[in-house]
Image (tube, helix red, strand yellow):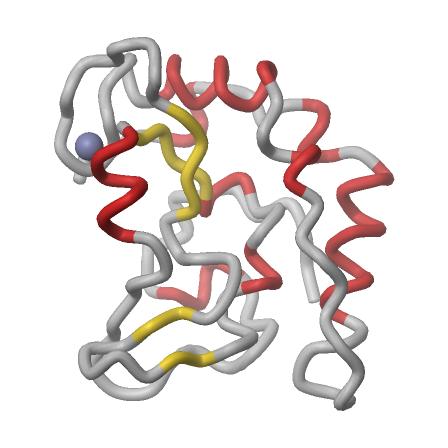
Amino acid sequence: MIFVDRAEVSVPASMRSDKTLAAYNAIADVIGKTRRRRPTINFGIFKTREVKTALKMLFAGKCAYCETPDDGAHGVDHFRPHTSAAGFSGETSVHYYAWLAYEWGNLVYACTTCMNSTENMFPVTGERAPILASFPKFGNGGQFTPIMSV
Ligand SMILES: [Zn+2]
């Protein structure tokens, strides 16, 4: 995985918009609190040219996972999946990590091979972080820029 300094690229405006905050709050209001169905992830927030361009710049035009140079098909991927994170034995955690769907620090630039191979796999040793844990609590030293707080 490529190390990047998130401070080198500004968080795209679309990731800081009222629309993004509302989408985040809609998820945060439901998961882990009620049996209501979680709102659908709004792909239009992060699958934009602006976000893709910023991620391409941040990852120097390479896949964050395998470092393959962009072949024109690279795209936006979630490091932690936005739904049903799967563990080592295939068990899934349905709400993991929906609350990070709009988190700039959770987005990476990736090739189609890596995006297709990772899907919702995100095994962890031990227990997952608590639902709605803020991004710095994942042990990354706060290098990412959390834009939402819970
Ligand atoms: Zn790759």
